[in-house]
Length: 51
Picture (spheres, rainbow, N blue to C red):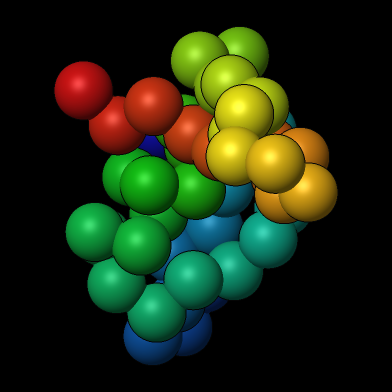
């Protein structure tokens, strides 16, 4: 899932470096395709489903 880059963990998918395992875990979920678009009027943001 990750490789050590000094004191950072690196995403194997895109190479972004993150400072802790929790952040890396949440980031990797972006690549999994489990996202949805907020249906609140005027929002339209793409969000990640962390379930």
